[in-house]
Each structure stands twice: as C-alpha cells, then as structure tokens.
Image 1 (cartoon, one colour):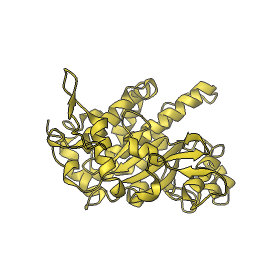
Image 2: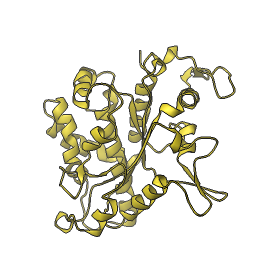
Image 3: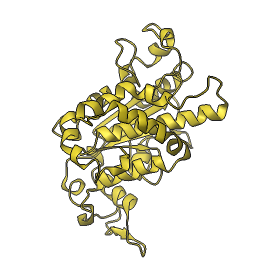
Length: 314
C-alpha cells in the first residue's frame, strides 16, 4: 500500500484507540450515533461532529451514580473520542493527533515538552499531542522510499524483524531531529469534568508560557525545547459533565482557562465567552498542515473512507 509516514502514523494512532477496552466497548454505541449524524458523509457533516461530541459521549452514560473507576474510564474514553474525531478531520494533512504513547511520539518531542524541577523530570498531563510535520518530501513520499540517518549519522533501517515491519519510531526520531525547528507541537488536555480540573491546564499553560523561572525549573532536555520549534500551544477540551446552566462566562472554571494559549473547547456548539466547539481548534491551532482548508482536504479524502481510512470504522 502506497502510504506516507504521516498517514501511517495516523493509522497507528487510531488503531491504538480501538485496542483499549474502554473505547472498543463504547464504540458500537458511539458509531450508531455518529452514523445518524453524518448520513451523507459530507465534509460539512464530518466537521460538525465537533458540535455533537458531548451527545455522542453521553450515549454510553447509563447511570447518574458513577464509581471512581467509571469516572476514570470515562475520562479515557473522552480522550480517545476527541483523538478519533480530530484525526478524522485531519486526513490528508500533515498533522496527526496521538493519545500519549511512548511507541508513537518521537523522542525529540517528548524531550521538548519535559519539565525539569531541579534534577526531577516531570511530564505534563498531555492527554493528546498533535504534531504538525513540515512540508518536506520525506513526509509526503511513500514511507517505503524514505531515507533517513539517525543523530549519529547512521542509516536508519526502514524495516525491522523477519516480518519486515515498518520501523516507525526510529524513522520518526531521525526525521523530527533533523526538522525539529519546523515542527509544531500542540498539547491537548481532555477532562470530562470542567469545575474540578480547569486549574490544571491553566497552571501547565503558565509553565510552558513563562520566559524564565526564579527557581530551578526548566523546560526541555537532551538539547530539545519548545522554544526552538515553529509553534506550540496548550489547549483544554471538556465534555462537560456539569449541568450547562451552571456554566457562565463569569464562572471561576471559565475564567481559569479563558486565556489559555491554545484555547478552551467543549463537545458542544460554540458559546461566546464560555467555550468554543472543538471543531474550531482545527482552524485555530491545526491549520498549517496543508495549503487548503479542512473542509477541502476532508472532501478530497472522502472517497477513501472505506479503503485507506477504513480503520476509522465509519
């Protein structure tokens, strides 16, 4: 199959979602609701799913009394649903959204977002990471035709093992290290509950936005830092699970994330002064992965939904 490394990475990212019990169990119910919302599978219907992600998520919320394990599982499910939706809207572009995984995130990117408190290494609560790769030939050609050298100048084996599996992470490590200054990183924190969690993205965004610290806090390691990349943002995406009439522009939870660098979003239509629909993140933060807008690239790729993109299971 002729496939570039960006689309191969997207496929691995989405397939990883279906390999988790939470997402795989919820999917038959979510799929039914999603299909009812996109009967014609047009680019406008697909993009507009962002206005209905809360409704989709709630189709598997069968009880008002939720245990701690249900809450935890619901959070993982929300992250996965957001990851699935964003990747669907990004097909054909050079941006991929990944649910945090050491097997899929290039090491230079993991190193760049690491926060060091003295000798203690800490990673942000980066539920999802969106990576936009530069407009270079090795991200557009068939992945089998890539030629890459690691940081020591040695050729990277494109395949590994007897089964000749594509050597994804070592190849990505080499390419991203070479093109690091042209990479975009967008951290997307997903929480089901807004009131209890709004302070977390607010504080992490402050850390990443700070120019200097009075204490021994630094960002980045191994020579990689977010200050050296093309663009960085930190976003918050919530369901939310609280009653909507309790959320106002003046609410403390809203005020905490109103100035967050990547924006504040939810799985509902945009409400001015409160939160934007998650679909607006595509234009605000994830626009540079192609010269065309998202509606155009989705439209161009729709013909492949049942073939190249069958892993979305639409």
